[in-house]
Length: 402
Image 1 (tube, rainbow, N blue to C red):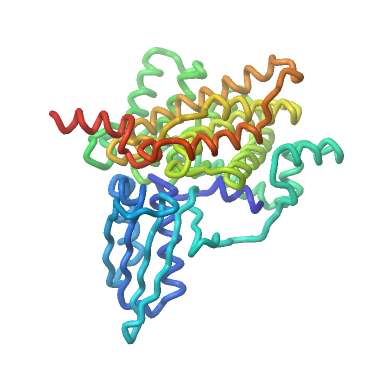
Image 2 (cartoon, rainbow, N blue to C red; image 1 turned 180 degrees about the vertical axis):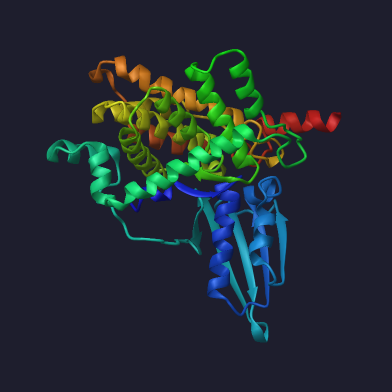
């Protein structure tokens, strides 16, 4: 496994798979073919079905810039991965080079079947069970294990992550108007905050958590600068968890430990399963974010490593089967509200585990993760980010009747 920075990084919304991944694809093409005269990009699968709502064509057009290009959407072509881009580059003398690039989630891409590596493997273990055995044998806590393999510089990295997350919450609470797109969804975080103040509920934890999640999620939907954790669509979960820990007056040093373990949980999910809604449904995005959030809370509150693992497992287990069905492809309905619901769910998972006898745990995190991945593969394609089933279908049909 590489770095936990793969699942906690700064980027612009609204979708890590649909905007950040394609951005990295275009950068790769321009770097490899600086003499390109024309670039043809064909978006397939989920990228074709929901690319407009996710601003995929916009971001590709922006980064290709003055290079002559054409972008098309092919919803019929059968591809192995739902986030596939077929790229044809015309070079001088009419030589054409073809590349198949896949956005695998969290902004990462594969090129002709090979993952584009941005660094070396840092971890000798690839399952939480292996890591816990190592921690038991050598006397490490989970956060110490991460810090040992990442190095002290990762602490400074998370100082920046923390600040960007805080800034996104602040901007979201102060912003007004509609989010981009034809759904005409109004921002709600500011009104929610004002209602809280007017009703003198400033000390209500759940209210504050929900507002923080809405604020960060709305910033993501607007294309603002947010922390991808582990995806853009789930970027509001950890900000809600962060607000909870701050209201609990948890020292920042312990919050930072929580970030480290949350990153480990997300990295394990990305390595052994998926964090792509197009591949495994929203359980791979919000479900994983909820699991990360529960582990973050458990770590920051000083749970021992078995309880931390159990918190992550409970959160993921009870997110199984969650569909990804965005209305008209926008990362707005149900995505924004869902982030708030699952931030609260992360808190509940950690709270339940705190009072559970540790010997009652019969299912491991690794087993829940495998189940999540297999469940995602079994989901009908219409429930995996294509907006062809679920809310995406029902609400679209209702809108069209009006």
